[in-house]
Amino acid sequence: MKRLALLALVGSAISLALPTFAQQKDTITDPQIVDQLKAIGKKTGEAFAQNDATALAALYTEDAVLVPDTGPVYGREAIEKFWAGLFKKFHVINEVDTSDPYSPHRMGTTGDEAWSTGQWTLTFQGPNGSPVELTGHWTEIYRREGDTWRKRLDTFNQTPAPTATPSPAVTPSNP
Image (cartoon, rainbow, N blue to C red; front, side, top):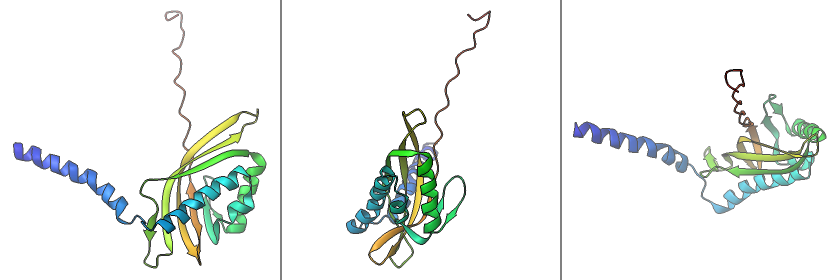
């Protein structure tokens, strides 16, 4: 019985350690590359704060794919039009990308591809002028073009707002 409990404990410890090991195994440790890739998130926030679709599109490769909840958008030119259309509808006040702790990760063998995951938070001016905050998660694949890293694939989702807890119904027997 003690042996079975020990095996269960060891198995649990190994299963908890494996995801962490897998996440750390391909993590990029070169500080220059890490800084360059994290700068893309900062530039994204700056472009959103300026409602600048051109600056935002410049962060993508020519053949990039953006995947919002409405479906894929192919190519830098179409991505710029997508963001410009969004900025016509909403005035963004602030946008922040936060990479997950083990991002970015290496891809391939040439050293010019990487991927990251993280969370985004965006505040825009609502219809009545008050700020509205949205949040969600993103995944990006990057490709280095010369000395510049750009987004090759950008996917994101929106985390739904928590549902309100309904008030108890007031009935004649429950005033």
